[in-house]
Image 1 (cartoon, one colour):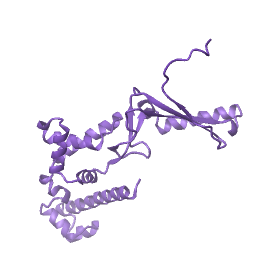
Image 2 (image 1 turned 45 degrees about the vertical axis):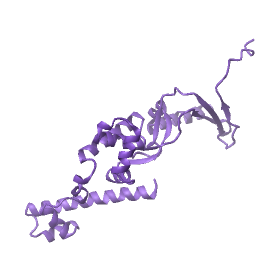
Image 3 (image 1 turned 90 degrees about the vertical axis):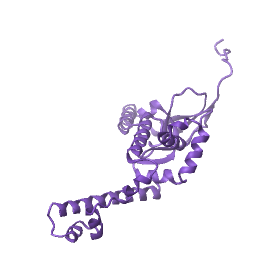
Image 4 (image 1 turned 30 degrees about the horizontal axis):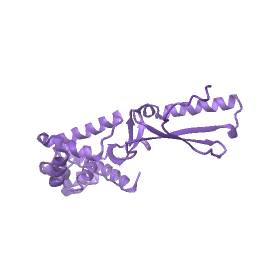
Length: 252
């Protein structure tokens, strides 16, 4: 995780903790547990003036200007739910798709005309709108995605991986397989006509799984197979292209 993202998460956590302390101080004054606003503020480590303003009806800064925002809090929540749902399906939305969803939510009459939506977005919102959107929702993150087969996503659970390697170790021990006779082979498929990486917005999750995009495996592939031995030696990669015709000479 980059330093900027770590800082954003830290700021969001500090703000949440501060709001909890302010609420407790206000509740303490209203319930009569403190003789004065100042004592309540000191007890929870917050500023006296902040507690006093909240008791007079002042709103949190990020909620004070919601009437000036393009989306209402309820509409933003619906966009967040949509992003999370698509991520769970294995198809995190690209940045331009999120922009389209925001525009269509406010102005469905624009339809799916890409140029009209881009013009509206550029006119009504500044270039940092999505950055501020992510700041308001620290559970989301933008990152470069990579294509991932749907079946592999389901098998990327840490428990499944741990059980696999436990079985491998038992087999090696049972048959006395040395490290020099242990090989690992993997393949990488390059789908023609599909970009391997794109900027997407998705849920912040464990390392390595956030930006995976599921694919259905229906595109033509160029496959590269690589093999490495347990002692560190490697074999030359095998590159497999689509065949033009079946060669039957070997069968004869």
